Length: 181
Ligand code: NI
Image (cartoon, rainbow, N blue to C red; front, side, top):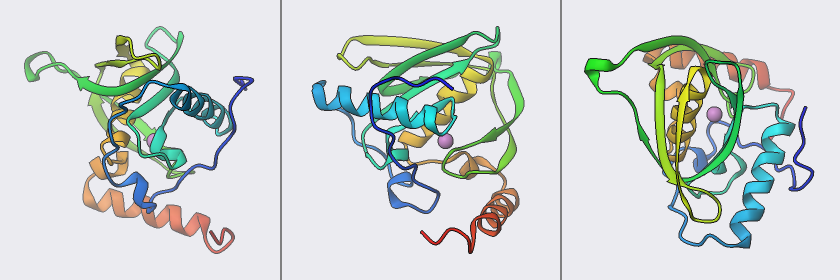
């Protein structure tokens, strides 16, 4: 497991926590506070063994996510995106990838969810420079999943209602009553 060497591991917020279910605010200041947040996000993501993490997953309602995730060539790509805007292929050129998806905020659960097999995110790095990230393979799914988080949406919100309910029931059964948080 990689560690960033800096940054503090912060607790992951779980489904039901209001911060996960409302849109995050855009970042307006690219300052030391933002840099420290990004370090904490990397540290928290690696500690939780995730391939992506949105700021609201550690309780901060700002539009930032980090990732360290393989693309379709199995090469890991790592970065941070501030104020992301997602672009997926139009309906004519769109191919859906069936894959299982999970989330650190719904630990222990996975469910199949079809998503476009490529995605592009436009945004800024932690210094405020414009960036574009193009993702294929798992990274395409990750970019969509993390942008969803920042809009207050979990992957389970994209599942058929019955499946969503099942995932939540399984999650609650697995986590209670041993974790009284
Ligand atoms: Ni997630």
